[in-house]
Length: 147
Ligand code: CUP
Image 1 (cartoon, rainbow, N blue to C red):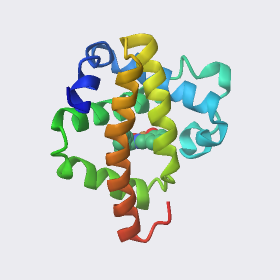
Image 2 (tube, protein in one colour):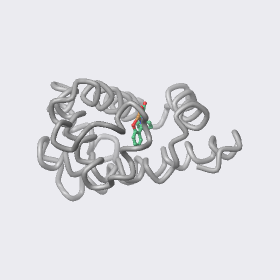
Image 3 (cartoon, rainbow, N blue to C red):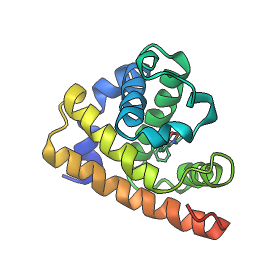
Image 4 (cartoon, rainbow, N blue to C red):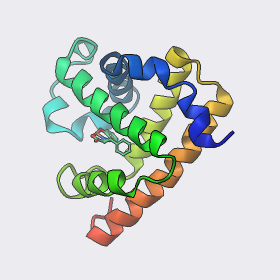
């Protein structure tokens, strides 16, 4: 099965509740990689213990997972989705590229626990994301953002 389909097979539970899963992803990202919390000024001041109930964190987590869902469903035909995302992350949010690798690992773990993504599925997610991240990186270079 193609990597996209291996991940999409487990997308149902994520899609059924983007806010809850999105909060789990960002809360875990900020706990496991504390420096990532500083990337978005509006999240920098949230105490570790308050993350689970933070609506802004849930909302952004939902945004991230919805984007990932769109990318997965496009099965590689995602130029129109990815380009604006890469541009805004280079010029507006200034998110260094390695953070996409970190969030990929966290999404894999959350999906393993909440959506039954197995080891092969996690590998498929890494593979899909490494292609996407390479495209973001190429775009960053074009824009002169070191990333
Ligand atoms: O949109 C947004 O916000 C993003 C999403 C995505 C992109 C690309 C691919 C996938 C997804 N984001 Cu936000 C991202 C990120 C964050 O938040 C954090 C960290 C890292 C990354």
